[in-house]
Image (cartoon, rainbow, N blue to C red; front, side, top):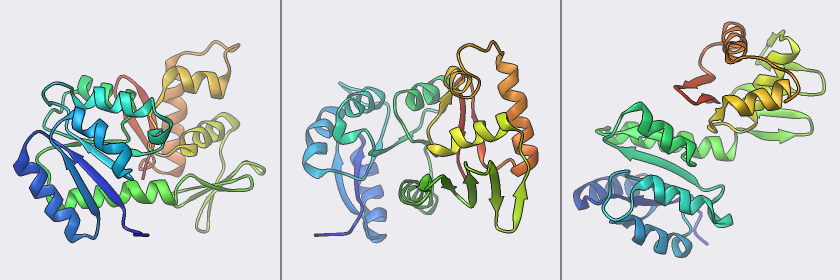
Length: 227
């Protein structure tokens, strides 16, 4: 059985499919292509990709709708899906991420940068977010739930309980965009009335303590853990 990672590229422009396919195959990936969303939905169960790269603007069915339909199937609930599109409006990015996208990459992009993003997605899937007992390994951070301790190498970080709970929640699923209501419910609970400003303050304190590179703001939606 082949150990190559399998990538399905979906775009209605043949030259883009050929260009990306060529560069990914050079890196050792197994690649399949589809020219539209309908073909992608038909091909995906047969090809069983590890990653699907989706254009958004396509005839008949756009990439966001394709993503929504894929996520409804248990087979693709954990498959990586990255949008690669020329559209860079905030509302388009929000819609793509809210409907199950793991990453949003804007065209044009250099092949080397695209490959780096793809490899980062696979590292996230295979290594980050893995657990060992009550310890959570997220990038170069170790989050020990038993001891309420966070460390990076020899550095230890002292966090308040809500700061720790917030970090543990975001890091439990690297790349997932947690909406504000999810964060409020899971960290503060539905019985406690707090405002959005409370989340922002805790995120700011976390960034001050552990560094600003881990928690990313998704404008108008919420926050995600990345590296």
